[in-house]
Length: 425
Image (tube, rainbow, N blue to C red; front, side, top):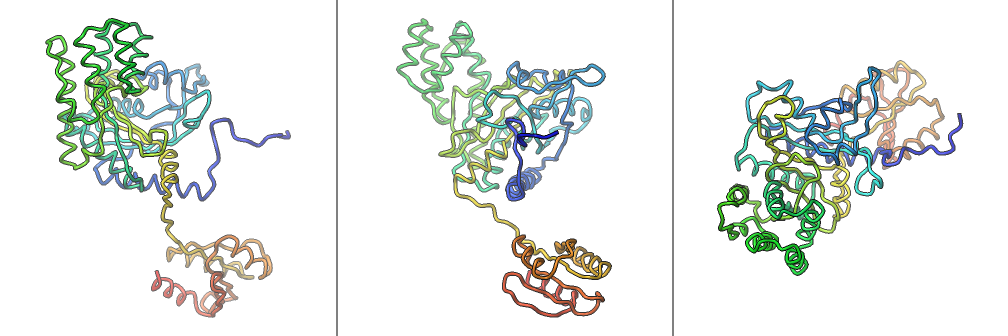
């Protein structure tokens, strides 16, 4: 069969070695930082039963899943995110694990989209879940870990916008508006246009106290500013409790000395429906998309098996982090590892030499082309090889070593050469 276009499917792409190295920089930086904070890595299947992945996440995420029928007739799907798989694992495999449970993951997830402008069909996430604790300290730890992790990969001017899922839901419900008008109101809150917001609320005859509350909350930019919002009515007591929890988190952020990096956004929501408490998104200036986000989901895990356990977490999109780093002019420091090409007419001796280099922790390649010296040297320079070693009939005798960068040639034993490398590293 002849293919006229050897392209990957829409929303997917290939990653060449330099790109993979950049991805590895971010993944390794995040993995190291997550472990420093006491989080343990977890993995789940790429394919799961659609019932498990669909539980409590909302119709928008369910519609974006890639679903197909297994051989036994059951419907399975590619995971679109990792919180549902983690909830399933905790319920089925970790129910007796001491709480709080700190977990992290770095994996690929899959979502269908019409455009793939914001993200691909397949993209990589790195995230954490803090399960079994409902304190302000837990919320503060997650926000501090989020900021710390983004700084560790090299990003500057990190900021986090924080809202509260239940606070916004409860106040929108109190308006008595239909779903379409609630959506319009929420969008107006996001625009932070006070004149348009007031005009909409006047047209829809919102109660004066509720109207004032929306205006006050939409004008707040910092968490400490929400302390000035007063409801003055017992019927908003639950909502006041949400504000109190936000202020408690603010005090924890002060202890981490990051309160100046966290902003309040009353209109902020996450598209996944399981969030119940604080929600947040991370960003950097001059990059038009959030790098990731998360929130508290206290009623979610029990949907998988009646295990009532609170939780909070976040996920970062690795490609967006890489794009933001590039926009800031950051170049990941490449660890220079010496590469050596071993050439010999005596295959058994060449293999022995390569083994010796490998055992010493040196990256070594065996010449398999049987080309002449001129072609070998040309390849070595083009491929970024540091040294070419020409080995004769004996491994113990001196070998000829070419430094491809300086052009210097010398004859020494491999043992002496390795000692030289060890002293210069």
